[in-house]
Amino acid sequence: MERKGTITVIEKGKATIHSYTASEEGGLVTTQIIETEKGLVVIDAQFLRPHAREVRDYILRLGKPVERVIVSHSHPDHWFGLEYLSDHPVYALAETGQEIMDLGEAMIRDKRALLGELVTDSRIIPDHTIEEGQEVICGLRYDFKRIREAEAGVQLLIHLPEVDTLIAQDLLYNGVHLFIGHGAFEGWIEAVKGLEERGCGTILVGHGRPAGPAIYKEVTGYIEEAGRCYRSSRNGEELKERLMERYPDHLAPFLLDISNGFLYPGEG
Image 1: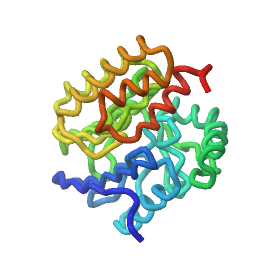
Image 2: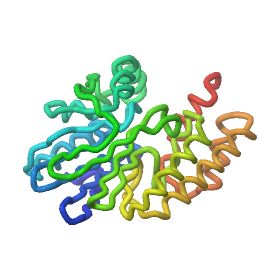
Image 3: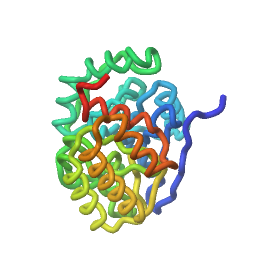
Image 4: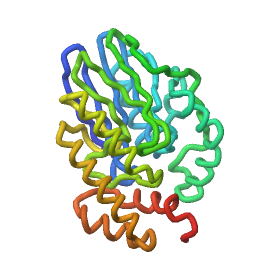
């Protein structure tokens, strides 16, 4: 059977990065698999079941133990697929775990009403808490940092300094329309500036394929344009139309529809 998603493999010395990107149907959401001699660390778990199953099957083919699964933030496209990885320890920031506990069932009901069996019917709550700071996992140093008020209220940034890699997840998208429903345009721009200061050569994003340092300017430009359009648009339809005209090559415009559900809650 033909794979729905795509996998980019990057050799980084003591680590091999396997970056799985879902098809456009799944929002091109990414799962990052960090492989060392000692095992695997998986970051984020996909949205739709077909993509989550592909991630699980790919992990099984790698033939190494999964040390932990990390959820970067509470948006459902990054944790619904945990049902296929729940036999491993699942880690998240305390706020992320609490949001999944409090809102997860409502998120599932909402998405199943639209997508049916394509999405999970199981709320998997992270059972371990990540703290900010440094930790060695599977022989590789991880630097964890909490980012507030950007694409989401709280997100986890992961830096792998020994292999010159930044795991930004939804702080950055590559060639995909941004989810701007949180509305924190200025905070998001400041967060991206902070990422750029780290100077990493390999950047793993939350939607789209891995990128290089040029991604910072691209995403900052989109956020700035989105903020201007939002402030001057009369409604969600106008906002979406303007961003699609400005970025005609970007994929997954339905993410703008989801954004509009938060930015213009009285519409529809």
